[in-house]
Length: 189
Ligand code: ATP
Ligand code: MG
Image (cartoon, rainbow, N blue to C red):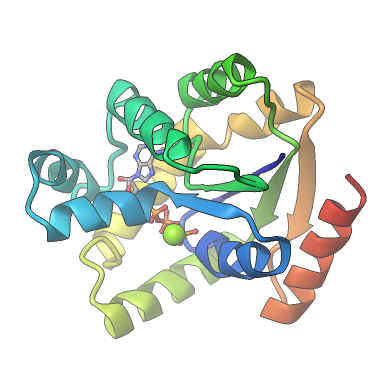
């Protein structure tokens, strides 16, 4: 199985590039953000809990996220591989992912870190908020999310470097150019 972690700050293009990877390599896609937004839309208990964190730019608690992730992963049958988009976002989540995959005879193949400068992230997310109306894409919440990214999520860069899975991808440029770099990294595996 090809198990790819797509990583990067909010607005770095994880969702956009994941869709292309899924299409080209025939993988299953887990976007934790999409899972949570679907729960919110359906008005479930989980959705209500998630909304209070998301609207505040905070992360959903690890224990909850880890359970959700495992149940989505186990719903895939005869999978060629999975792209993890938006997970892990904390060291605890990375450790849990490693354990979960190990228990299933699997491992992360590569972690692709989409690096994008902060001013470009702000521009993209404000534009997305105006076009899609995503409630957390407003200036105040974006700033909080970036703080959370730097304090809780960015430490995963060193974690994956130590684990030997890290791959840097320049996240600035055309969508096609970035995708070509991603494919080159995957095809080397
Ligand atoms: P991108 O624009 O690159 O796709 P994003 O950060 O804008 O990324 P999502 O990945 O959709 O957006 O996540 C939206 C929100 O959902 C996060 O700000 C967070 O509150 C919550 N969330 C998503 N994944 C996790 C996770 N693994 N752990 C905790 N909270 C999460
Ligand atoms: Mg996304």
